[in-house]
Amino acid sequence: MNTVNLADAKTHLSELVSQAEAGETVQILRRGKPVAQLTAISSPRKSIDLDWLNSVTEGAPYQEVSAGDFIRAMRDSDRY
Image (cartoon, rainbow, N blue to C red):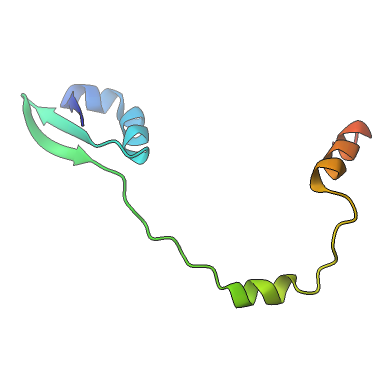
C-alpha cells in the first residue's frame, strides 16, 4: 500500500489515480494520519450472449487472405 500526504496528493492526483486503477491501494494522510484511501472500482464484466453472436456472424463470408497478409498488402500498396 502506497501512502502520500495530502499536499502531495493534490499535486500528483492523476498519477495516484493511475496507480489505483492499476490495482494498487493509495492511502492519503493528513498530519501523518490516514484520512482517505484510493482504490480501483471493480465493475463486473458483461457476459457475452453467444447465441446472438453466432446469429450475427453466421452469414458473414470468410476472408480469402489472412488478416496479416491483408494489412501487409495495404501497407505495401501505400493505402495505409
